[in-house]
Amino acid sequence: MSKLSGLSEPQRRTLFSSIRNAARECGELPEAYRRRIMREELDVEHLSQVSATTGFDTLMARICRDSGDFQRAASYATQAARRLQHLIEDVARAIAPDDPYGYVAGVMLQSRLAPIGDDATLADRLRRGSAWLDVPEPHLRRILAMLKTHLRRHAN
Image 1 (spheres, rainbow, N blue to C red):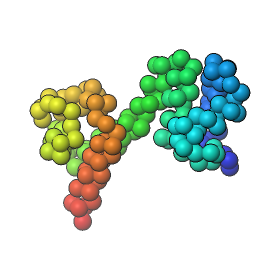
Image 2 (image 1 turned 45 degrees about the vertical axis):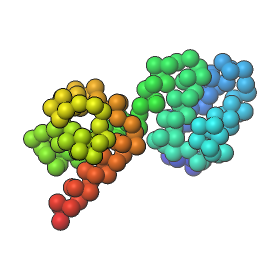
Image 3 (image 1 turned 90 degrees about the vertical axis):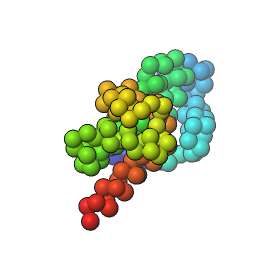
């Protein structure tokens, strides 16, 4: 772990290499470009304020967009949702090992935090992985919190 920030050394290398390329594309000096996008995307001034997860992903998505690499930008932009998906799946398996996706679909629909569909259709789409990115990240966070609360209450 770097002493200058919460970023790992591989993340720092990726970030700075990508910044140099994007700055060249934008016609800016790398340092000026880095400072500008950190302010615009994260409202931070120093690299030490960038988190190793969502902060890094947000910056990389922006850098990739500025470089014209939209496929890579989309991958970085959806990282947080994919992490939440895996956490939700793990907690749901602990609660309902026989049908975790059905359970999550029921929670999503009952709390009105789901994309449109019925229980069976949504559960199938969650199982296949096609519905997760239809749910906004704040909704995924709320769903995870609900599931963790349920798990905690039933563990006692």
